Image 1 (cartoon, rainbow, N blue to C red):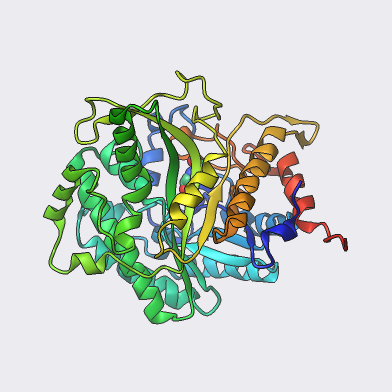
Image 2: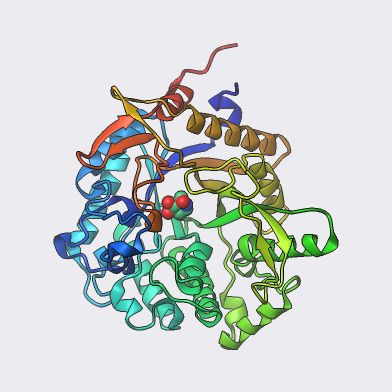
Length: 449
Ligand code: NOJ
């Protein structure tokens, strides 16, 4: 088994959570509603009818959770800010109680020797902005930049590490194309508009932080998948390339100044109908790091549906893949291949695994959760990180999704990813076996040999 030191002295170990999934307190202290409050108000929208209630009650239990992160031996505490807690209507009047809450969270991190990494947007758009078109209204660029400015000014004397957005493909794809997530909008036009304005917001958000805080460490967190064609037939290989363009390149390449990946998908050129003069330049920003978040493998094949993509995924259940609770194909070896893929872009300065985790059913028996599978999953992922480092790839951190079990969006409370178990009736926390493993791995003194 490897040792912590082998990852390098500057390697950052972290845990990550998000506002909507953890905080609860949806109406407390002046917070406005977000699209996810609206969505979860209708229990039918959640697969098993779960009601979010207080989620994992981070709003009241942040001290306990941050202390747990410290106890596990982590260096970094990544959390997101709820836009509607700071600006209840998305813009206009600032809610001082929201600012004060995040100051308490940041201070608590610093007092526990944890470096805060702030995600500025983790999917919970203020409902008032959605009522004006949300991500499909170009004005979102001004709304977002104002919000970024408020946060940078409010917290920039204590926080240097910023993740401008989390998994843009997830919230635009699931929320504005498939209608599966909030705000339940569908269709290619909604998606392409939302996508383009999101790219502009990420790049311009990064530029805004840089202008206010030149020494900041600024990145984005992008979802990605290891994609494999079902076999080597050219049509399936091409199909895999198109899925790769959508899942792994679509948001990255414009940010790096390379434009949208229309080389393998000429139909993507229609996104230009939403461009204004100068957008090509405004889409790019020199990020300090790119965060990648890899949860599952996709096996792709050529198909006549859906049009434009002409490719689909062979469902992991049909392939008898190694499934997690969400029926996704768990394949740690894909991580090395992805790190290699991303390291081939000379524009990327540093890679961070800004989320990594797995959901399996957990059983709390006599105050113990024996989640050996989750522990082994992380060990296998870390082995891939070491392999990448040995090949000279600059990976500088591994942040676990997630610290405590929380609300998994449309899937409710069932998928559990935490290193710490939460009893959602009592909010009692129990460090799982996987958490204990991290604790001993991260806190054991280096041997002198
Ligand atoms: C990525 C998302 O950022 C997070 O919100 C989600 O809970 C995890 N993936 C697990 O699905």
